[in-house]
Image (cartoon, rainbow, N blue to C red):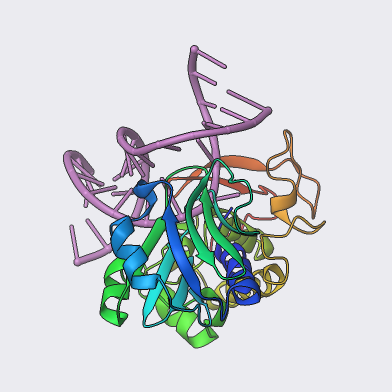
Length: 261
DNA sequence: TTGCATGTTCCGGA
DNA sequence: GTCCGGAACATGCA
């Protein structure tokens, strides 16, 4: 589930439910997902403190609590839930922040991702690793600059969190489809006109995804059809092609996306 | 039963 | 140093 728009949705969710709420206890139901503290250590650091204004960088959710910051990554299947205190737990609830008026639950079917605690900026960077500018507020000049220094494939570049943060497999395919660009194209081959189209597609895809809190499934979105068998291009009706590109299963239209340069 | 899945990291080879 | 593919992680679903 979680790419930039999803995590942005989780950020809004925390802002809506948890800001100002006081943490009374933290229940670590699966300590494998608690990455850099013991359950006791996490509880000690957070108990009695209140949630502040949550931020997002790429696919990371940064939730200040008192002086510390809770870092969450959602892997492929993570999400957040807000429930009445003491209500029945979901089997995949892994870490529960019990607050004065409800519980924030980090839920994750698999065990990719997790929850970290950071005391300061240095510790935060250690956890997230180097991240490029967030794809939501990447300006055109910066985008051009980043691509200019890049050698490999364009899909790998879009998904490289160190280059720009927030785009994953679905969003990169969506952007390439919108820009009519073959996902196997090399960055170094892209002509200026194509780079501009790519940036426009990135901006539009991110902007339109954010209100949805997910990669949209509307009529003009590849994501809406990519998992159907025999899926066809929403633009021209050609049967979509699916193949590995940059180590992931890419989906593209062999007719619309012929541009390699 | 087998393969596949929206993510990240590590390794080996070119 | 750069780039790429593959494997690993754990779990549920078609």
